[in-house]
Structure formats: structure tokens, C-alpha cells
Length: 212
Ligand SMILES: O=P(O)(O)OC[C@H]1O[C@H](OP(=O)(O)OP(=O)(O)O)[C@H](O)[C@@H]1O
Ligand SMILES: Nc1ncnc2[nH]cnc12
Image (cartoon, rainbow, N blue to C red; front, side):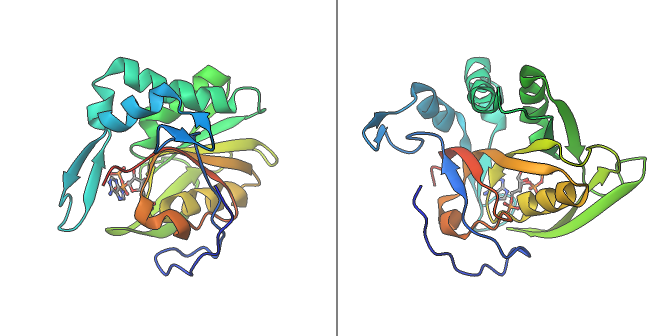
């Protein structure tokens, strides 16, 4: 991906740069002369796009359709595992709820611990919290104090990045605890936000662009 100037996106609280990294040839059969990974097309095709959910104007990317196809589900997990294996990743932090579907499988495969970043009032211990603004509302993420140690290399996993507000909150939580956030990883990126991600300077690795 090229380095492009970004506009200030008021949907996110982070003043950050565009650090988007797509899997090779995610959106096209060939990119930069390289053959596309054949798994990407099947991953893209397996994601159902539902118009006007959960409110008018939102094109909802439904990964539950992909989960019904174990070979495609496995390919998606494998692509992340192939990227992060050997990178001395101590923890995979998954964002509730859909980051909990992919994160633990990736963590187990690379020998990392899994840290759940939960919605408010779900964790029983002492927590730190970050509020953020979504494409369709506001929310908050919480993490247990002690879930990560200072200096640990962490990858943040979710199904989709839209405004980047959720990932930004996750990065902030982890950095407040002293973690070294190496990268964020998502199956899907919404193209309309492509140059407006605000990710605290951290790259986001995306397998496929939303089809609509
Ligand atoms: O890039 P952003 O604009 O922050 O949006 C992306 C977030 O939105 C969705 O979760 P949602 O908040 O709908 O919660 P859910 O997974 O609990 O349904 C998605 O799973 C991401 O976590
Ligand atoms: N368009 C979208 N589809 C699925 N999840 C989302 N979260 C934010 N925007 C979304």
C-alpha cells in the first residue's frame, strides 16, 4: 500500500496515520505482478453482505456465512497464522464479539496467549477501559489489569475495520498496560474508509476488502 495523506476523521479519537497493509492481491486477481493467494477469493465470496443492517445505509459484512464453511474458515485463520508465526508474538488480543471467533485459533496456532478485550461490565476483575465511536453508535472496551506484561508483543484481532475506532481503543488499552502492539489483523476492511484509518501509527493487516 502506498503512503497517502489522510484527512482528519472526526469519527475516531486518535490522531494517527494510515497504516493499512492488505494481504497480497486481496481485492484483485493480481497485484504488483504477483499472483493472488487463491484462498482470498473464496474468503471474500464467503462473506455475506446484508444491506441496511443494523440500520439504514449500513452494508453489514456478515462473517457467520464464512464460519459455516470450515475449509474457508480454516484458510482465513491459516493466513493470519502464516503471517504472525515466528514474529515472537506473546499475545493475541481479540475484540468482543467477532474477534473472539478468530483470535483464539490464531493464538493457539502461534503459541501465544489470548487476551479478551470485552464490552463493559463483563470482566470480573480490575479493568482499564477505553470508550470509542463506531460507524453506528458508541461503545467501550475493557481489559483485565495484568492480562499483558510491559514489553510483550501483541497482535490485535477483529473481523472488520470500518472507522478504526474500535481498533484504536484496543491499541490504547494495550499500550496503557505497556504492551508493544505489533499490528492489527482483520478479515475485512471497508474501502470507503481506506484512507481514513486511525490506528495510533500501527499497521492493520487486512485479508479482503468489503465487496460493497
Ligand atoms: O472500525 P469500527 O468503526 O470501530 O468498527 C468495527 C467494529 O464494529 C464491529 O463490532 P460491533 O461494534 O458491531 O460489535 P459486535 O462485534 O459486538 O457486534 C466489528 O466487529 C468491529 O469490532
Ligand atoms: N459494515 C459493517 N459490517 C459489519 N460490521 C461492522 N462494524 C462496523 N461496520 C460494519
